[in-house]
Image 1: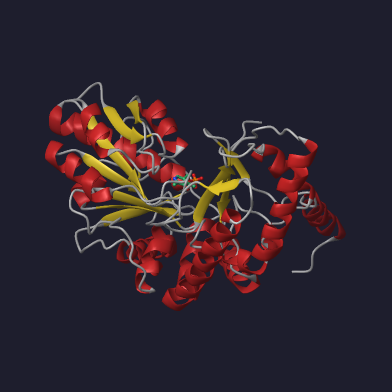
Image 2 (image 1 turned 120 degrees about the vertical axis):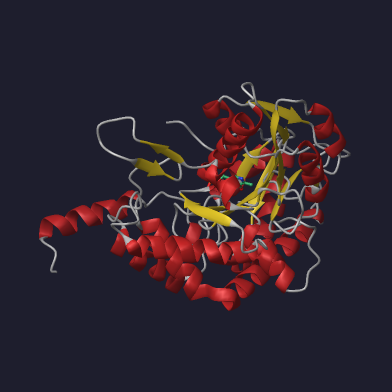
Length: 413
Ligand SMILES: *Cc1c(COP(=O)(O)O)cnc(C)c1O
């Protein structure tokens, strides 16, 4: 329909409100947003708009959303080497997938072994969402320091387990330094104890699947590894779809049953839900279905190749800048870098401040103080300009003794 002046004015105002947002479509943002070009964005938006007010809470009323979920879960199950027994759900994002992995572990421990004071064994590198999940669900988070190569220390994890352990976690890759944990060894400890092992492939799930197809040797990371009981893959990251889409796949339906919630203990009838949300927008589900179908194996192979080549090129370029070191050679498309302590250490947060004045946005993290780059296909066009600016920023901070602040990955206001 033709929009009224009033409606058009409000939409204009909404558009103008974004004027100072980070320029994520232009390849200048190494965090938070992903871009595969205008057509992919239009496909996502179109499907999203069609189903934004449809409600995923009840698939009987919306067979469309049931179809989208089952086809998207099937696609992801194939990427993570799940077999015919595997069963999953779409969630609103990595955090909800991880909340559900922790909840399912707690529930399994309670029902199968009567555990009332459960704990989860987490490498120090495991995502903050596990901390949140443990806090929400009353599970003790046992953090275990990582090895000097930033990968999980499996002997130390094994040593931290006891009879109340319900979950061991590995990441593929972990967010902070972008390396893949030793998943087979972690899963073997979990299998020996007969408890859950969740692989957090929120970041890497799509990329690693297609790096394998591109012939790169990838460390074992998915349901092909015995002992892994569940895995999470975010589609609103390297699936390049609209925000609000992740998938959790369990090894079988019994393990998945510990995720769901059902009650009839109220006056409104039988109520079942698969995740945290009640009413659930169909928009992200429809967008994820449309984008995964539109891109297909060919699209994802191409996007993965571009992101991977760009990430390695970035790592090499950073290593060539005096005063900086890349923390670890990236196993996927994430890396972090910091000051080379053998030289006069540059304040990398001040480097991020200087880069921000040139329109670049990076995550600040620590310990140790580092900058983080999540490299996606859109950076292929900008990586050389970024490296030039990074070199100049380091020189500026060094010669002017600039200091910076640590910032935050997520905010509360
Ligand atoms: C992004 C991320 C998460 C959390 O996902 P959200 O979509 O931000 O909720 C969890 N684990 C890893 C490794 C991630 O990169």
